[in-house]
Image (cartoon, rainbow, N blue to C red; front, side, top):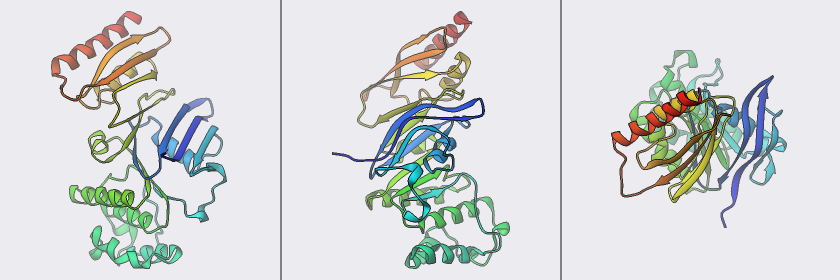
Length: 293
């Protein structure tokens, strides 16, 4: 029986009167790569910061490897984190960053491999302010991978990387999974997530009401609910968040006056959806919006 590495149970987070997360519930199985997908501003980073206990004033419960997330201290070496913005020590060079982290976690034997994998050889004596955005991102990733952890949480880890380095990071993530680690990736790059993830958690709505849609490669039929005003739902449709791949066909869409859209999705493995079908579905959603007003 598969154990759960992370469980969100009815999690809600407010910033004053603004609801950032609404009744979020999902589970991440151990030893898997799970993608957290959504448009910018959909709540991915807020979800991660609740998981990491950066925000501890949320309601509901988050469990990490059987323990309440609010009780896990940083010195337990359970979680490693790649944030969406570079964090570094301005007074340390690249090599000093790597030596410092590896000395804390007793992973000095991994430093040379990390330097080679992310092509940091020519940057070792440079300070952070001398690095390009892409190289800063590689330093951030390298420091995270030098830690000891059971769960890797990565918020937009591919940003700033060139295609070669994206491929290398994908390889590293696959290696971690084979080694028994659990990985959560937050990104808006749907095609990349489709290639590397075992499970996806889809945060659709850009509004204050959010919802996660869990589905796996083995899924056949899934129903879910999107909360938000009609125009936001139509936007999600057009940018491909609802129809993230041609194998997903909208069978039923009923927009209630409350702004509640109920969608059933069917994965038909041997049939592709043509442009005519996509346009027709878009027109149906647009017409529904106009009729409801």
